Length: 238
Image 1 (cartoon, rainbow, N blue to C red):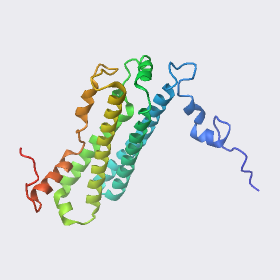
Image 2 (tube, rainbow, N blue to C red):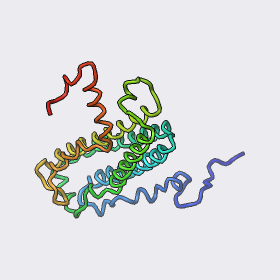
Image 3 (cartoon, helix red, strand yellow):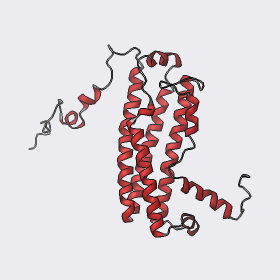
Image 4 (cartoon, helix red, strand yellow):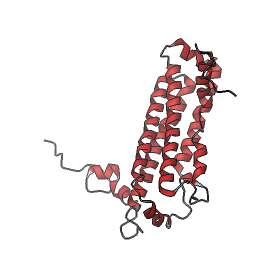
């Protein structure tokens, strides 16, 4: 009879779970109670460290999705994009934890951050690079196939091309939603006129909210409105 109590994996840790997940190393990444200047440093670090892990997954899935596009492997690409978007949704919900960080208590935590800033996040930098990579890959694919995105919608058929486009829109929107929530959390904790750890005013982040990785796909929405039954009735004057 097999002994399921016997640990069979090599590595550090008292059991196979700890050895595979490397929980000893993972849980040692946060500053100890003796090192912190405020107990909410644990909250602050865990939110940001877990965000980096989810971003690593989001980038991996987005990169793999991009690699599928040139060969026309669009449904798997769309599924990977959806999972990447879900990872971004998860880190958006993580921001809710920071709403429980007192503005005054955070002033103490800021004293030990140096010039560290979310702008230096390796996860976000990699995500930006991967997002632009997807935009380029889709543009090349669309041109090579003579793809008219607006016609995909007018045809009202759930083609692989349309599913990919919708997944790209979903991904782009999830990033924008994160930016909105992140900005709101920062203004809640710091105030909108405050200066961040790298000398940038918090309100500067508001300008990033409307940034889009796939602007051409969003422009299709405007085209559909302009050419729909109501014509340009609902379009703002230029």
